[in-house]
Amino acid sequence: MFETQSTYAATIGFFDGVHRGHMHLLKQLCDIAGERGLRSMAVTFPEHPRQILQSDYRPRLLLAPETKIAKLQNSGIGLCFHLHFTSELAAMDARSFMQDFLQGKLGVRTLLVGHDHHFGHEPGTDFEDYLKIGQEIGMEVIKADALLHDGSPISSSRIRRSLDAGNITAANDMLGYRYTISGQVIHGLQNGRRMGFPTANLGPYCEFLQIPADGVYCALATVDGETHPAMLNIGYRPTFEGKARTIEAHLLDFDRDIYFKELTLQFISFIRPERKFFSPQELAAQLESDRETVRQTIKDLAI
Image 1 (cartoon, rainbow, N blue to C red):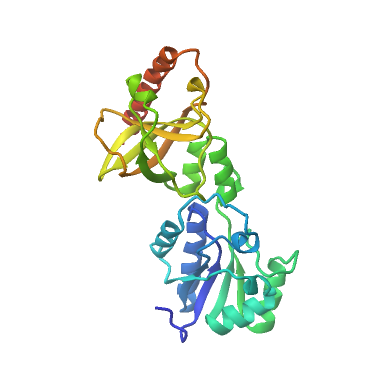
Image 2 (tube, rainbow, N blue to C red):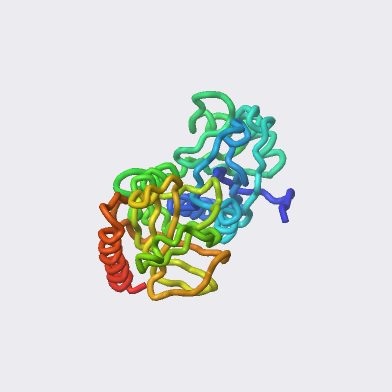
Protein backbone atom coordinates (compact mmCIF):
# COMPACT_ATOMS: atom_id res chain seq x y z
CA MET A 1 0.00 0.00 0.00
CA PHE A 2 1.40 3.42 -0.95
CA GLU A 3 1.66 5.71 2.06
CA THR A 4 1.27 9.33 0.94
CA GLN A 5 2.22 10.60 4.40
CA SER A 6 5.62 8.92 4.25
CA THR A 7 8.75 10.55 2.93
CA TYR A 8 10.99 8.66 0.59
CA ALA A 9 14.40 8.32 -0.92
CA ALA A 10 13.61 7.31 -4.50
CA THR A 11 15.16 6.36 -7.79
CA ILE A 12 13.53 6.10 -11.22
CA GLY A 13 14.05 3.76 -14.14
CA PHE A 14 12.67 1.15 -16.48
CA PHE A 15 14.90 -1.46 -14.84
CA ASP A 16 14.83 -3.90 -17.74
CA GLY A 17 16.49 -7.11 -16.62
CA VAL A 18 16.89 -5.96 -12.99
CA HIS A 19 20.58 -6.72 -13.59
CA ARG A 20 23.61 -6.34 -11.33
CA GLY A 21 23.88 -2.65 -12.19
CA HIS A 22 20.30 -2.11 -11.05
CA MET A 23 20.88 -4.09 -7.87
CA HIS A 24 23.94 -1.94 -7.16
CA LEU A 25 21.78 1.17 -7.62
CA LEU A 26 19.03 -0.18 -5.35
CA LYS A 27 21.57 -1.08 -2.66
CA GLN A 28 22.80 2.53 -2.73
CA LEU A 29 19.20 3.69 -2.46
CA CYS A 30 18.51 1.53 0.59
CA ASP A 31 21.70 2.73 2.27
CA ILE A 32 20.84 6.39 1.62
CA ALA A 33 17.27 5.89 2.87
CA GLY A 34 18.53 4.20 6.04
CA GLU A 35 21.02 6.98 6.75
CA ARG A 36 18.27 9.62 6.46
CA GLY A 37 15.46 7.77 8.20
CA LEU A 38 13.44 7.54 4.97
CA ARG A 39 11.69 4.71 3.16
CA SER A 40 13.20 3.54 -0.11
CA MET A 41 11.14 3.60 -3.31
CA ALA A 42 11.84 2.55 -6.88
CA VAL A 43 9.62 4.26 -9.45
CA THR A 44 9.31 2.16 -12.58
CA PHE A 45 7.19 1.80 -15.71
CA PRO A 46 5.18 -1.38 -16.39
CA GLU A 47 5.34 -0.64 -20.13
CA HIS A 48 8.28 0.67 -22.13
CA PRO A 49 7.91 4.48 -22.47
CA ARG A 50 8.70 4.34 -26.20
CA GLN A 51 5.63 2.14 -26.75
CA ILE A 52 3.51 5.11 -25.72
CA LEU A 53 5.42 7.65 -27.76
CA GLN A 54 5.91 5.41 -30.80
CA SER A 55 3.02 3.02 -31.49
CA ASP A 56 5.01 0.76 -33.82
CA TYR A 57 7.95 0.39 -31.42
CA ARG A 58 8.66 -3.19 -30.37
CA PRO A 59 11.05 -3.34 -27.43
CA ARG A 60 13.39 -6.27 -26.93
CA LEU A 61 13.03 -6.88 -23.22
CA LEU A 62 15.32 -8.90 -20.97
CA LEU A 63 12.43 -9.79 -18.67
CA ALA A 64 8.68 -10.12 -19.08
CA PRO A 65 7.01 -7.18 -17.29
CA GLU A 66 5.51 -9.28 -14.50
CA THR A 67 8.88 -10.95 -13.83
CA LYS A 68 10.61 -7.57 -13.69
CA ILE A 69 8.14 -6.26 -11.12
CA ALA A 70 8.54 -9.41 -9.00
CA LYS A 71 12.34 -9.05 -9.02
CA LEU A 72 12.11 -5.40 -8.03
CA GLN A 73 9.71 -6.18 -5.21
CA ASN A 74 12.14 -8.83 -3.93
CA SER A 75 15.21 -6.59 -4.21
CA GLY A 76 15.05 -5.27 -0.65
CA ILE A 77 13.51 -1.86 -1.41
CA GLY A 78 10.63 -0.56 0.68
CA LEU A 79 8.23 0.17 -2.18
CA CYS A 80 8.00 -0.42 -5.92
CA PHE A 81 5.76 2.27 -7.43
CA HIS A 82 4.30 1.46 -10.86
CA LEU A 83 4.11 4.62 -12.93
CA HIS A 84 2.14 4.19 -16.14
CA PHE A 85 3.80 6.28 -18.83
CA THR A 86 1.38 8.58 -20.66
CA SER A 87 1.63 11.33 -23.24
CA GLU A 88 0.87 13.82 -20.44
CA LEU A 89 3.75 12.49 -18.40
CA ALA A 90 6.03 12.64 -21.44
CA ALA A 91 5.19 16.33 -21.88
CA MET A 92 6.25 17.26 -18.34
CA ASP A 93 9.48 19.17 -17.92
CA ALA A 94 12.03 18.04 -15.36
CA ARG A 95 11.05 20.68 -12.81
CA SER A 96 7.33 19.83 -12.94
CA PHE A 97 8.08 16.13 -12.68
CA MET A 98 10.37 16.59 -9.69
CA GLN A 99 8.31 19.21 -7.85
CA ASP A 100 4.71 18.37 -8.70
CA PHE A 101 4.88 14.61 -9.05
CA LEU A 102 7.86 13.23 -7.12
CA GLN A 103 7.82 15.75 -4.30
CA GLY A 104 4.16 16.77 -4.26
CA LYS A 105 2.42 13.44 -4.92
CA LEU A 106 4.92 10.78 -3.87
CA GLY A 107 6.63 12.53 -0.98
CA VAL A 108 10.15 12.13 -2.36
CA ARG A 109 12.68 13.99 -0.23
CA THR A 110 15.88 12.49 -1.72
CA LEU A 111 16.30 11.53 -5.36
CA LEU A 112 19.05 9.11 -6.44
CA VAL A 113 19.74 9.50 -10.16
CA GLY A 114 21.21 6.57 -12.09
CA HIS A 115 24.42 7.23 -14.01
CA ASP A 116 22.67 7.02 -17.38
CA HIS A 117 19.10 8.05 -16.51
CA HIS A 118 17.34 11.14 -17.89
CA PHE A 119 13.82 12.47 -17.47
CA GLY A 120 11.86 15.53 -18.58
CA HIS A 121 11.01 16.36 -22.18
CA GLU A 122 13.71 19.04 -22.55
CA PRO A 123 16.62 17.82 -24.69
CA GLY A 124 20.04 17.82 -23.11
CA THR A 125 19.02 17.81 -19.46
CA ASP A 126 21.59 16.17 -17.24
CA PHE A 127 22.46 15.61 -13.61
CA GLU A 128 23.58 19.20 -13.05
CA ASP A 129 20.13 20.40 -14.13
CA TYR A 130 18.43 17.99 -11.69
CA LEU A 131 20.79 19.08 -8.93
CA LYS A 132 19.95 22.74 -9.51
CA ILE A 133 16.19 22.07 -9.55
CA GLY A 134 16.54 20.06 -6.37
CA GLN A 135 18.32 22.90 -4.62
CA GLU A 136 15.56 25.30 -5.65
CA ILE A 137 12.66 23.10 -4.52
CA GLY A 138 14.26 21.59 -1.42
CA MET A 139 14.93 18.08 -2.75
CA GLU A 140 18.28 16.38 -2.20
CA VAL A 141 19.61 15.00 -5.50
CA ILE A 142 22.44 12.44 -5.50
CA LYS A 143 24.23 10.85 -8.45
CA ALA A 144 24.58 7.08 -8.20
CA ASP A 145 27.82 5.20 -8.78
CA ALA A 146 27.80 2.82 -11.75
CA LEU A 147 28.78 -0.84 -11.44
CA LEU A 148 31.45 -1.73 -13.99
CA HIS A 149 31.99 -4.93 -15.96
CA ASP A 150 35.23 -5.17 -17.95
CA GLY A 151 35.78 -1.48 -17.38
CA SER A 152 32.38 -0.18 -18.58
CA PRO A 153 29.06 0.41 -16.79
CA ILE A 154 26.59 -2.43 -16.84
CA SER A 155 23.44 -1.48 -18.77
CA SER A 156 20.43 -3.22 -20.28
CA SER A 157 21.46 -2.15 -23.79
CA ARG A 158 24.93 -3.59 -23.28
CA ILE A 159 23.41 -6.91 -22.17
CA ARG A 160 21.19 -6.93 -25.26
CA ARG A 161 24.24 -6.40 -27.47
CA SER A 162 25.94 -9.36 -25.80
CA LEU A 163 22.89 -11.54 -26.44
CA ASP A 164 22.79 -10.35 -30.05
CA ALA A 165 26.39 -11.52 -30.40
CA GLY A 166 25.72 -14.87 -28.71
CA ASN A 167 27.98 -13.88 -25.82
CA ILE A 168 25.94 -15.63 -23.15
CA THR A 169 28.77 -15.67 -20.62
CA ALA A 170 29.08 -11.87 -20.63
CA ALA A 171 25.29 -11.39 -20.60
CA ASN A 172 24.86 -13.73 -17.62
CA ASP A 173 27.76 -12.10 -15.78
CA MET A 174 26.13 -8.68 -16.14
CA LEU A 175 22.64 -9.94 -15.35
CA GLY A 176 23.73 -11.79 -12.23
CA TYR A 177 21.60 -14.76 -13.26
CA ARG A 178 21.13 -16.96 -16.34
CA TYR A 179 19.25 -15.37 -19.22
CA THR A 180 15.90 -17.13 -19.49
CA ILE A 181 13.01 -17.41 -21.94
CA SER A 182 9.79 -19.40 -21.64
CA GLY A 183 7.00 -20.59 -23.91
CA GLN A 184 4.62 -23.40 -24.74
CA VAL A 185 5.86 -26.56 -26.46
CA ILE A 186 4.25 -26.95 -29.89
CA HIS A 187 4.43 -29.49 -32.70
CA GLY A 188 7.35 -29.14 -35.10
CA LEU A 189 8.40 -30.85 -38.33
CA GLN A 190 9.94 -33.87 -36.52
CA ASN A 191 13.28 -33.54 -38.37
CA GLY A 192 15.20 -33.87 -35.12
CA ARG A 193 13.30 -36.97 -34.00
CA ARG A 194 14.01 -38.70 -37.30
CA MET A 195 17.73 -38.13 -36.72
CA GLY A 196 17.59 -39.39 -33.14
CA PHE A 197 17.44 -35.94 -31.55
CA PRO A 198 13.80 -35.25 -30.59
CA THR A 199 13.28 -31.57 -29.83
CA ALA A 200 10.76 -29.50 -27.92
CA ASN A 201 9.76 -26.57 -30.13
CA LEU A 202 9.05 -23.38 -28.24
CA GLY A 203 5.80 -21.81 -29.37
CA PRO A 204 4.83 -18.15 -29.36
CA TYR A 205 6.98 -16.56 -26.69
CA CYS A 206 6.63 -13.03 -25.35
CA GLU A 207 6.80 -10.98 -28.54
CA PHE A 208 8.82 -8.29 -26.79
CA LEU A 209 11.55 -10.55 -25.36
CA GLN A 210 15.13 -10.43 -26.60
CA ILE A 211 16.07 -13.65 -28.38
CA PRO A 212 19.82 -14.41 -28.47
CA ALA A 213 21.79 -14.85 -31.70
CA ASP A 214 21.16 -17.82 -33.97
CA GLY A 215 23.24 -20.82 -33.00
CA VAL A 216 23.55 -23.83 -30.72
CA TYR A 217 23.62 -23.36 -26.95
CA CYS A 218 24.09 -25.31 -23.78
CA ALA A 219 20.99 -24.73 -21.66
CA LEU A 220 18.88 -25.96 -18.80
CA ALA A 221 15.26 -26.82 -19.61
CA THR A 222 12.56 -26.90 -16.95
CA VAL A 223 9.19 -28.57 -17.51
CA ASP A 224 6.72 -30.04 -15.00
CA GLY A 225 8.95 -28.76 -12.20
CA GLU A 226 11.94 -30.82 -13.38
CA THR A 227 15.16 -29.39 -14.84
CA HIS A 228 17.23 -31.19 -17.48
CA PRO A 229 20.40 -30.43 -19.47
CA ALA A 230 19.46 -29.32 -22.97
CA MET A 231 21.02 -28.67 -26.37
CA LEU A 232 19.26 -25.60 -27.70
CA ASN A 233 19.12 -24.41 -31.31
CA ILE A 234 17.92 -20.99 -32.44
CA GLY A 235 17.68 -20.30 -36.15
CA TYR A 236 16.23 -21.24 -39.50
CA ARG A 237 17.33 -24.89 -39.88
CA PRO A 238 19.27 -24.21 -43.11
CA THR A 239 20.01 -27.93 -43.70
CA PHE A 240 16.24 -28.40 -44.20
CA GLU A 241 15.73 -25.07 -46.03
CA GLY A 242 13.78 -23.62 -43.13
CA LYS A 243 11.96 -20.33 -43.70
CA ALA A 244 10.89 -19.39 -40.17
CA ARG A 245 13.06 -18.80 -37.12
CA THR A 246 12.56 -21.48 -34.49
CA ILE A 247 13.69 -22.24 -30.95
CA GLU A 248 14.19 -25.98 -30.40
CA ALA A 249 15.51 -27.77 -27.33
CA HIS A 250 16.77 -31.34 -27.19
CA LEU A 251 16.49 -32.44 -23.56
CA LEU A 252 19.22 -34.95 -22.74
CA ASP A 253 18.13 -38.41 -21.56
CA PHE A 254 14.50 -37.36 -21.81
CA ASP A 255 11.68 -38.64 -24.01
CA ARG A 256 8.26 -37.72 -22.63
CA ASP A 257 5.29 -36.09 -24.28
CA ILE A 258 5.37 -32.44 -23.18
CA TYR A 259 3.32 -30.89 -25.97
CA PHE A 260 1.45 -27.74 -24.89
CA LYS A 261 3.28 -27.59 -21.56
CA GLU A 262 5.27 -24.57 -20.39
CA LEU A 263 9.01 -24.89 -21.07
CA THR A 264 11.57 -22.58 -19.49
CA LEU A 265 15.08 -22.34 -20.97
CA GLN A 266 18.09 -20.99 -19.09
CA PHE A 267 21.07 -20.15 -21.30
CA ILE A 268 24.41 -21.50 -20.03
CA SER A 269 26.87 -21.02 -22.91
CA PHE A 270 27.19 -20.64 -26.67
CA ILE A 271 28.46 -23.73 -28.50
CA ARG A 272 28.61 -22.79 -32.19
CA PRO A 273 26.90 -20.74 -34.93
CA GLU A 274 24.10 -22.28 -36.96
CA ARG A 275 25.22 -23.46 -40.41
CA LYS A 276 24.03 -25.56 -43.32
CA PHE A 277 25.24 -29.16 -43.56
CA PHE A 278 25.52 -31.19 -46.75
CA SER A 279 23.20 -33.92 -45.46
CA PRO A 280 21.07 -34.87 -42.44
CA GLN A 281 23.69 -37.51 -41.63
CA GLU A 282 26.44 -34.88 -41.38
CA LEU A 283 24.17 -32.73 -39.21
CA ALA A 284 23.42 -35.72 -36.96
CA ALA A 285 27.13 -36.31 -36.43
CA GLN A 286 27.61 -32.68 -35.43
CA LEU A 287 24.62 -32.82 -33.10
CA GLU A 288 26.13 -35.85 -31.39
CA SER A 289 29.27 -33.80 -30.75
CA ASP A 290 27.17 -30.84 -29.56
CA ARG A 291 25.27 -33.07 -27.17
CA GLU A 292 28.51 -34.30 -25.63
CA THR A 293 29.63 -30.69 -25.27
CA VAL A 294 26.44 -29.94 -23.34
CA ARG A 295 26.89 -33.00 -21.16
CA GLN A 296 30.50 -32.08 -20.34
CA THR A 297 29.67 -28.41 -19.72
CA ILE A 298 26.94 -29.30 -17.23
CA LYS A 299 29.28 -31.79 -15.54
CA ASP A 300 32.13 -29.24 -15.30
CA LEU A 301 29.81 -26.63 -13.82
CA ALA A 302 28.37 -29.20 -11.42
CA ILE A 303 24.85 -28.01 -12.17
